[in-house]
Image 1: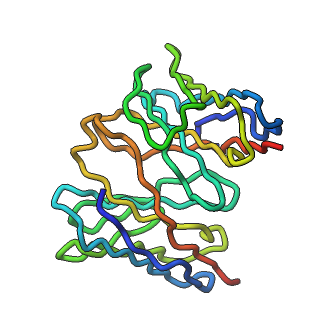
Image 2: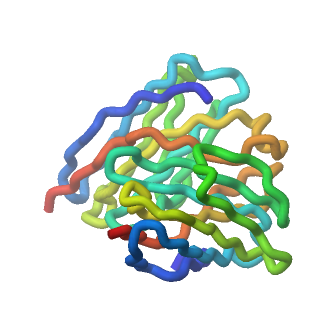
Length: 114
Length: 115
């Protein structure tokens, strides 16, 4: 157990639907990062939050959004789902943006869009 | 971020040392060298990082060339549990200031360990 909790572990949904992925960071970590991993693209950075504020954006589609709540957990919302959104979605956390302690990743949510 | 080059795959025998190479010829003076690994069906896991000097921790050693254009991750005694994809990533320490917090993953090296 890495200390980063992601729920659900598996999700199967239909095209056009909307889903919410949840991430609880390791205790004390203020930064949360979301990554998408598909077979042909590898690990792609989506978005980063630090203490509730968005800090960096990667290749995140407009259909996707995220937020970090006051208790520091984060949610990634995926809407108007397409077959190509099927992937593993990882959340990672770290202590602070301004010092490097290593990122701790969760075990991921496997999303299957049918 | 500067680019890294790693072999697509490597094989090792159990209980033997493994040297995983990484080339980063365009590394800047403020780039840290990071290694992560991803075991099958799991999220990536931090292994080690360094700037100029060689580094050791409980998981591995990092040997950095004097010109910093290459580095080697050393697993001293490979176990079956070390079979994973190993990623070598450069990250500017300026990024630690908060402007860009993300790690950019390449394709990595898939390490197979034979019993």
